[in-house]
Length: 304
Ligand SMILES: Nc1ncnc2c1ncn2[C@@H]1O[C@H](COP(=O)(O)OP(=O)(O)O)[C@@H](O)[C@H]1O
Ligand SMILES: CC(=O)N[C@@H](CCC(=O)OP(=O)(O)O)C(=O)O
Image: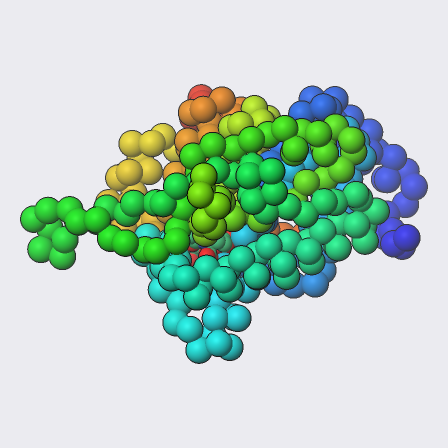
């Protein structure tokens, strides 16, 4: 148990204030993407695990999809293999794919499972290969040539995009009180592995489950403009313009695209959340504050 700095009166008031949010989200599915960059500090990792367990205990269905880009990068560096990215996607040759599978499916997945279990939850770790639940195909990346005259297809190796998500195993576990923790590794019909950006997997899992909310935890306050201010309530057209202007780049590209896509495909809201804030998940679900970049189908009307 933790010693609380609040007096009992404050504790019950806070609990009582959470009631409408608990009622609103009860029985609803929330897909939480836990980015590798948000997994850095010990206190944050533990507050993440406690938040996930609390959601489950008060009747929500949290599903965790994790990344681990920096952790893959660290092992590649130790092995003297260079990391290269195109539009936020890791160029993945066969050797790199082995490392990706080991780090995501092994190290990172099991450490998150361990943390949630340590906080009193019942977490089960899976990759997209279990039950072939993340069916993938090779991602084809198109880019403008340097002279801007035409586009060319770039081969970035064993990088996949989601073809189909099977939800039966995730739903079965969730209904039986477990918390599924998914690593973003996909598989094709021939059994080949694919490295998939974790944001893309989280978005597609949220869509397939008809989730209430997609939460993308990262290491920034949200999607920022040129002045460093957090933007919210954006449309696809505005985002395309920001990409063209060079304001959105790197890892934020797949993140914002999948946040928009998920909402277009039936998820009630997507939010890019600052994972560096302690209890970011609870702040987002149970209070009016804590909103990073929120995207709903009625853009601009930001409220959780
Ligand atoms: N407009 C933007 N607003 C905020 N972050 C941005 C923007 N454009 C690019 N980024 C970059 O995107 C990063 C988040 O993506 P990424 O590193 O893939 O995080 P994660 O590991 O959490 O998925 C930020 O740390 C930042 O460097
Ligand atoms: C294709 C691709 O880029 N895959 C990612 C998968 C992990 C990931 O997405 O991790 P974060 O969420 O921590 O960035 C990678 O290899 O880094």
